[in-house]
Amino acid sequence: MFNVEDIRKDFPMIVNRPDLVYFDNGATTYKPRAVIDAIMGFYAGYTSNVERGDYETAVRADRAYDNTRAVIAKFINCDAKEVAFTANITSSLNQIAYGLAKGWLKEGDVVLTTEAEHASNLLPWFRLARDMGIKVEYIPVDSQGLCHVEDVKKAMHDKVKVVAMACVTNVLGSVQPIKEIAKIAHEYGAFMVMDGAQSVPHRPTDVRDLDVDFMGFSSHKMCGPDGVGVMYGKYEYLSKMEPLLLGGGMNARFSSDGSVILKDAPIRFEAGTPNIEGVIGLGAAAEYLMSLGMDNIMAYEKELRAYFREKMLKLDNIDFYNPDNESGPITFNVKGVFAQDAAGYLGAKHFCVRSGNHCAKILHEVIGTDQTIRASLYFYNTKEEIDRFVEAVSRITLESVIDIFL
Image 1 (cartoon, rainbow, N blue to C red):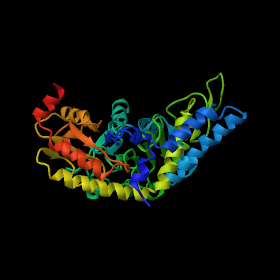
Image 2: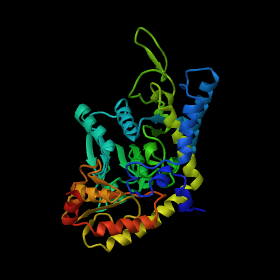
Image 3: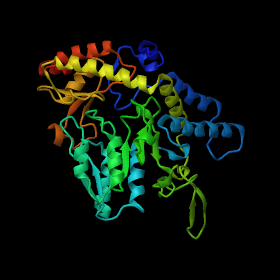
Image 4: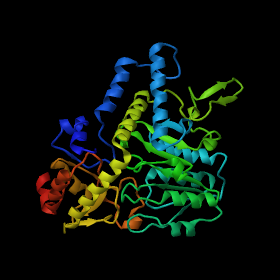
């Protein structure tokens, strides 16, 4: 049974800082004791490099590292050889973009995306547009950031070689119809690239069912440590893709004449010493989430957000940008108060939210403002925290903000 009060006891930050209401989960998440223990177990019991030693602790580290690959494969329903570890989702999406640029894309080809995307899923394509002459085009989205299948069909044409978008957008929480969009992309012979940063931690993800060709996500947004990302790719593509980084560990052999033989995927994408303890922590995080049940997490968060929405709709001092979405953050502004100032007021009251443009700097073309407050939930949040937060928001005025900083 999903008991949030019991779950909250698993998180030292919640236990140690009961004064805080943490609604910045879209940026990063708290870590459960199981993850902390896994990392400390590596540091205290079998610290060594991986794939480089034949002694007992090195073998133990190898097994723990490789086990995470198997755990993540189970978590997203793929083969372990289709899971590569990176530094974060930004690294994953850059590898995908630049990897496709070598051997698959050419001048005049089109990458289709939306104006609701995070910088990590836009800027690599912008650079390729500048450097090799590809074109970036956009599927229209509605006021809630949702793109509709009919609009995708209208936007597709024979020049489109890649469709790249987030499953759940990071500002408005729009859940895009990825499975249907992937089917349309494949009918045109295009690759489907999915940004899973805000979806994989919150809902069941089955890459085989979605039929995406590539996907990236980050450990730190799903109760794991910072500095670790995952790149998923269908093996038929990973096995042919050039790695972005070269160095130790990812090559089988190289010679003085400049010839290099790469290892098979996914190891070819893991140049240098990896974040070993981070990968082990990621494995513990995925196992923890699976023990709770991703269906349970999604259902509880949906209920929590619906409750949050109803409370926020009763306030007359805010502009609420995504009331119609069932998932993702609550995104709003306080009327007459700059977003960062309102967030600072809330921070002084021990409420943790994010303000700004949230790395989605062209979304203002859709919602009409480039600065918002984002209150993002996770499964360890409660209705009581929401009640406290809404009460605090109701009291924000320009005068109250000035008073708190003087």
